[in-house]
Structures are given as structure tokens and as C-alpha cells.
Image (tube, rainbow, N blue to C red):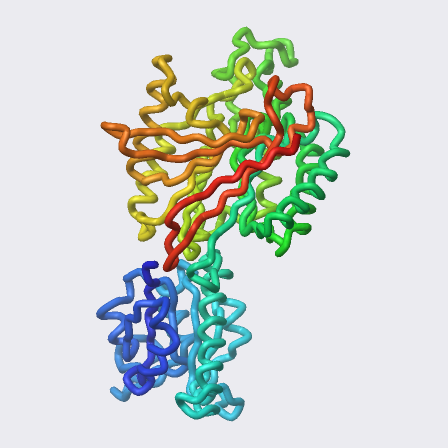
Length: 488
């Protein structure tokens, strides 16, 4: 695991260096600055994942309006530094405040933690006087340091980087893979019986999922009421699992049925100013030049986006989102995995409800983001609604071949290790081979958990779900084991 960069601004850094190393060296690469001047000259504009700032710094004369004019060195507070040098705060980099002591008798020199915490992203405070409470090297000291380090690290990851800490670096990760719930296809009575059965089967196998991945077609045709039904079912099964899975650990890909088909109606009409009413357009296709008020993101997937916001914020610094609603989710990089969820229904239209496709510029954006990040060698899982076969793998159709060539670039350059998908209404696993000599082999699994409208299940197919176990060693995922569980 690559270390994060922490800038420590403390005029007594050399005196406290051992304490800083003890607290931060496990997870952070330390960049120390002894005073404000040193920071300005050598690192103000650099990137830092975390700032550690001493409450009272020794400034220098003549550099700021509030400095002394008699040539004497002045003391500046942490709040002075943050307010004057906005480069430190414009990216909302998390901050840890340190001081010799947090005591009321320091008077006006003691910066008000409450006021600053409301204005800046302060995640923790450290008082060096606390380090004298236990004898150095004692069990009490080691226990206290461990707890403090864990608190700092978890605060940094959970609340600002939005990444999930994993206590044991050798723990395996378990993914419960679902798809094609399609709430709204018919009454959902049987769906709640499925929760009991899935929970029972997982318990019998001793499986405790860490993440739920749902590979599209959450609802039947994008209606708000259907997403409400799906939301209740998903949160209920997440709560029933042991341990309970939080909303941020439920991942979605968009499916063709998640489109609000009623939004297509706007494409069939345009306003005729001569007769002052709406009339049918001659062009019944997706592109109506005179109608500029309909776009896929704003209308077709609007209910899906509102539903998705209940689970995790797309504004998280650990989530990169494209204009076409695909994401690169780095919340779990500390577990050794990265999740890429693709919108593979970009060609959906009134005449094409399957809409199989992907925006090639979007794929380029994802490739560039992943290559440019410091997690490029991480175990990467691709999540989509459509399978490789749907997207042109081993397909002789020229259009599908061109689509697949774009996908091959993503698979090769980003080094996809596993592909999870749905749509087929059956639980299966297989693999694809790419490369000049087929030397790259990527396993993939597809599944259909509920498919409440059972009459639409293909002949001979079975409802089911997949359990994906990611085997880890030294914090690195080495392999994936996929187990298919049939419900019918």
C-alpha cells in the first residue's frame, strides 16, 4: 500500500520528531516544516493528503500585514496561518491540530478549537502533554499510542478520504453479487422470502459479506415507486446480514431497466408556436434537433440518480465520476481493491430499450484517471450490467467489434482482474481471453437474483446469486473464488 503524504508544520518539530514518527510513519510519508517561512519557500503549493499544524508557530517579520513592524519575530496562531494562506485549505485537506497543551490559562493565544473546527476540516487534536501520562515503552503507553494511531487513521480514511480501513491485512474480502432485481415487474411478496433464504444460506456456509454489488436492472422501468420498493428490500437484506452492511458498501451499476421510459415521451413532441400547442415530431428517434431540453443524465436516469444518492456521495474525493455516470470507486483501496462501475446503456432510446453501448471518451477518461493515480497496480474489479458477450466479445458484427476494441483498451491498460455483470437472468461464471496470444485471462460472473417476473426467465435458466471471495495476503488480493448459489 502506498503511503499518504502528511505535511507537519511545527516550529519544534525536531524536539517532537520521535512522537510524530511513532504516530504517522505506518501510513504516512512525513514532510516536516519547522516554521511558516520554511513552508512557504519549500512546499506550500505541493500536494498533501493530511496537514498537521502546531497551534502556535514562530513567524517572522515583514512578511504579513499583521506582523510586527519593529523587526522582531512574532508568534502566529494556526488560525492566522489558515486564514492567510488559502492554498492550505482550498482543497479541504484534513487537518490535525497539535499543541503543547490544551489549557484555558493560555488565554487569547489558545486558538478556539470549536470555531476553527466549524470552518476548517479538523479531524483530530493532539496535546503533547498527554504523552507524559504513561512511562515510555510501558504496556499502557503502547496501548494508548495504538488507540491514538487507529483513531487518527480511521478519522482520516472514513470522514475525508472516504476509504474503508480493514483491521487485518490478511482478511479475505467477500462480495455478495446480485443483479436484475427489477422491482415493479410484479408484486414483491416473494422478494422478502428470498432475504430469509439468502441469509440462511450464507449463515450455513459461514459467509459474512463485506460488500454488496448490484449489477443493474434494480427496477423494471425506472419509476420512483419502484426504486422505493427496491430501496426497502436492499436496506433490509443489508441489515439482516451478519455483520450488517452499511449503505456506503453497497455498489450499483446502471441497467437498461433503470431508465425512466416515460421520459422518452418528451422526445415525441415539440411546441408549435403557430398553433400554440404541442405536436408530434416527424422524427420518432432519439435525436430531436428542435428539442434541447432532454438529456440522458437529467431525465432518463433522474430517478436512478436520486436513488443512488441515498447510498453514497458522488462528491467523495475517493469516487471519480464521468459525465456519463460511470465511476471509479477508491473507497476500498486499503482493502486492496478498486471498483469501476460502467454505464453500458448509453445508446438507450425509444426504439432501443436495450441500449447496449458505452461512450468511448468516457473509457479514455477512466483509463487516464486510473493510470494517473497511485493505485494503478491494485486489484481492479469491473462492474457493469451487460456482460462481455453483450458488449461484443467474440462477435462478428462490425459495430460490436468496434465497441469491443474500445473495451480491450480499458481491460489491458487498467489491468482489470475480475468482471461482474448481470442482464442474462441466470447465475453463471466464465472468462474472457484477450491480448495478442490470448495471454490475458479475465474471469467474469453474471447473476440474476430475484427477477420477480418469473415468466420472463429464459427456458432452463435459474435464479441465483454469486458469492465472490477475494483472497488476500499482505494486504494484496491474490485471487478470486466465485461460488454460484441457485434459488430455484
